[in-house]
Image (cartoon, rainbow, N blue to C red):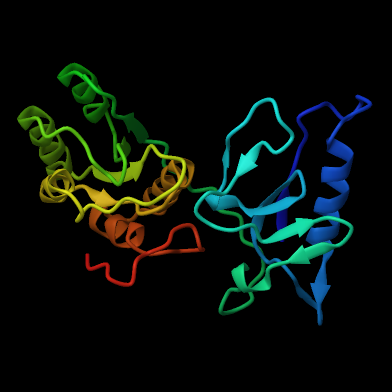
Length: 239
């Protein structure tokens, strides 16, 4: 188990949330059942909730409940007792020693779409020297403008080997590129779905995959599956 935590108020302040967060995080990290860790995951513990790390985003700078996992339920809740939702915990098929991964390729960019976005903005991002992957934040369930220039730029970028992943700007929900015509056009341009992945998770996943020397096609294949519970792939999905 790897449990990240922190505080909204410094630990030296009277009302700090740091002490409670730290103590509970240590207890969760050390928790075992029959000699096996109860939560063998990388998680965030904050304000009574244990959240899967690769499903979580920071959503508030002022309140103690600063983090939220919108598309996956908490793994545990700490009250008087720590109540684990064991059915939601990821358990690896085989137990192996912890292996840190340092091979990350930082040639990744985030393209956040907005109404009235200009060709110059999109062109400047898609033509960054050495660029390998783009996380494109779209509207709703994965929609984007259907300007000819926009789709042409996407197609050209994909043809150069750039992997473009479609994630939603919404806090909750999933990309469904087959739902509307705009999504179909993105598929035709070579954009792949990020499903219900957070932007942070999609960026890190691309960095990890390219960092390990995978080809663009291999990266696409791995983006279309869940490596460690970071994304929900619909049963009906067909690449």
